Length: 317
Image (tube, rainbow, N blue to C red; front, side, top):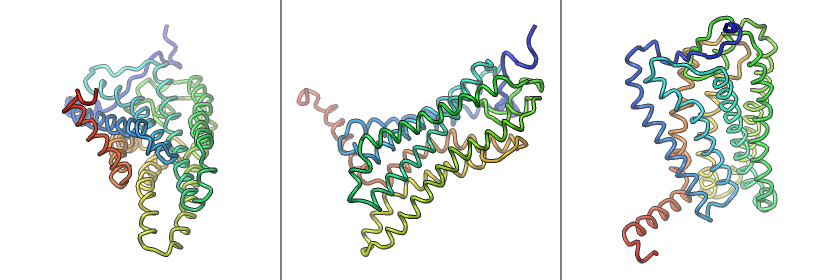
């Protein structure tokens, strides 16, 4: 007999209210997902193969692009298959695993964004000490901490979900195992869990946002003291793409998760989650490269080299 307080599976409602119209979403969503995957993969490969990009800034950028790929992989392929499936079922274990990786990888993304802000702060405000302060070992430690800390901190969070009593059904009104819809299915006292979730959001999202704000406060103050207009423009241009990522990433996530309590509008949350799952990863490669002359020059060089190899493979053998 099934344990009603601990269902063996959940039903992901997703876009079921749209009925047969949800099939129309499959094509556009698939295209956005593939473009996001290809764009971020191109960034990673370009940074890896070109020694001109073996710098702290591009090291963190490569980490961020990898995280964009992994975060979308935790939720989007499942959602795409559910758009075509009559029964949108996920096992209890599968739901908990998806929850764990989605929020661990998402938290890591924000810590990497704050690492990128620190890198820009040191490069602009302390250029003479940049090589020492942002050495390969320091960058590896910063990135390692950004990856390890959320994955460790999320373990008790997931275990707390496993031990909740789910007596309000097993239908999750979302396209993945998000926090608020899961909590709404529970009849346990979740006030302590909600406080813990809020502390976690403060720890990973708002603290990294604060580091980024303080870093850019010092950066702006330093850049404004540069006498030449061209020097100021060059300094700001290296930060423009990062600031755009910060605005898009933090605004949507703070709206979704940095609020105590579980009485959220699930439909609104679902819409914002769509933006973070599809539109943001799709736009990031363009944001990161269109304003970056160094990366564009390297990418053009790599494309020319590949074109030459394809046109005359014998001479390059």
